Length: 113
Image: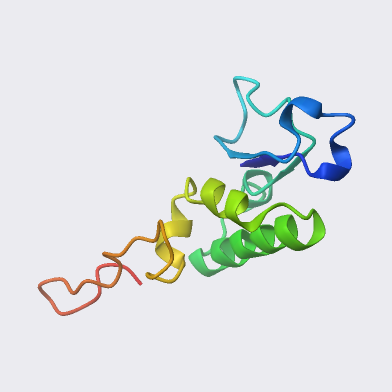
């Protein structure tokens, strides 16, 4: 689950203004209560999505946070590195990417696509 507070909500949520945090869903400890908005986990738990669907939702959330909510791209990227699928899905040249992705296994097939 991704919890965040865009600048437009800073008056109501001043302690988390401009912050984005990735954490477990469902939130059983209350870690997300200080934030104004959520995405990610709640969407995925509605059904069991295919990997391609998860990646599409992941990048849609990434885009929404940057374009719609005007969150700094560096902040969003740093937070999304905490999502297991993200480092494997981004270009290997991007800081934080899983650079081992696609290393051939003994059978000649990529370890992870």
